[in-house]
Image 1: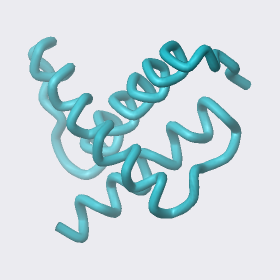
Image 2: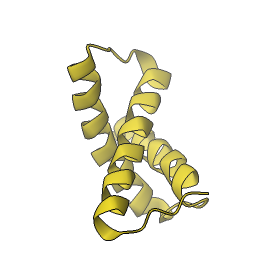
Image 3: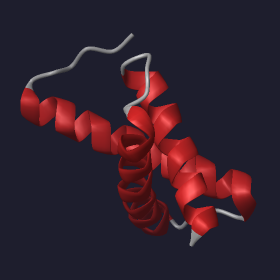
Amino acid sequence: MLWSLFIGLVAGWLAGQFFKGSGFGLLGNIVVGVVGAFIGGILFNLLGINAYGTIGSIIMSTIGSVVLLWIVGALTGNRTRT
């Protein structure tokens, strides 16, 4: 459980760096990362891709987090990317 939160924190922070150039705070990064991990898991499953190990989980979670932030940005009209 604790390891999953760490992966979510890293993935959320990486996605925040990609979209805004800064993170969302500790709790925000964890939430974005955990929800992103769920989205990434679904996307990887649909594509038939497996994520192995810690690095694979971080990559999958980060991709899911970026997709989540992209969707939120599209819905709110905030499409700024640095």
